[in-house]
Picture 1 (cartoon, rainbow, N blue to C red):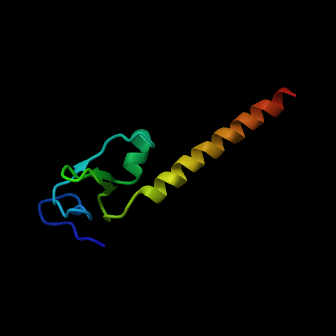
Picture 2: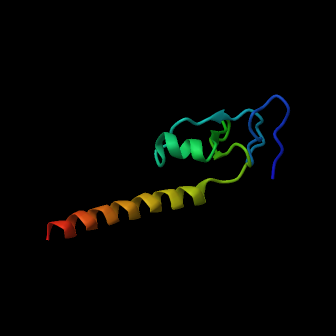
Length: 85
């Protein structure tokens, strides 16, 4: 998709093309782990969050990540519920 410019660790913002995004260390949807798994960065100009290595959106990953945890929680609750019976 995008090339990492010299002197920067991340690709430029896909929306405004700002070349110095900042690393996101924690997110509301994934905590520390989700942000690290997606190489999440945030553009200081337009506030877009995206994958810092590819420039791709992280929306699909967020949906899958949250879905995984919801399903896992439901399975654990079902096991606990049926174990009492």
